[in-house]
Image 1 (cartoon, one colour):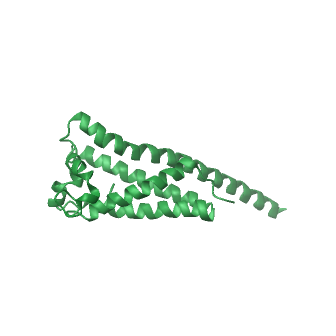
Image 2: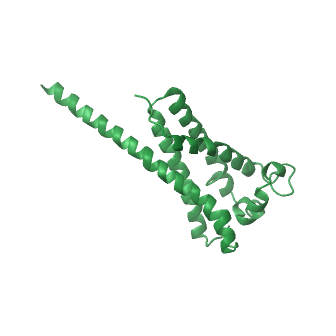
Image 3: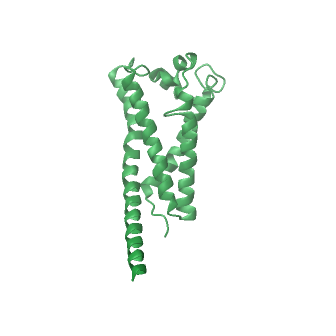
Length: 184
């Protein structure tokens, strides 16, 4: 049985792969990727963002805050997530294996979990990295872009989760049918 694919799910994975690599590159290359660094030209939009979200800026870097490189939404786990995204696309569209659904589900659950953790950190630390922004800046440059990473993965979790649950029900029904056939 071939993998069931959805255009919008594959498009999300395809479009986010370069974004995730770019973001991880910025984080791992700090301080060279930051304003004043010799590689900053590659990550020029971060000139604004590092002042909006201190996790990406000098404050976190100078304090040795490891959250940026180790955890959500950046760097090390992003590379793992991206590997899973690439594997999903390969397994779903090249190999056509139903295992792609499980891998895609696991990857998007990771994306969603990391993003929720990112938001919860801000909540529990009282906005320590973004609370200095005015409301408009916060909404336009932090809530909307990061909200997209909550919204789309939530829909993908729902869609792929439904497919996995359906496959499990079919497998259960088949196993029961085979078991009852063997009893006769």
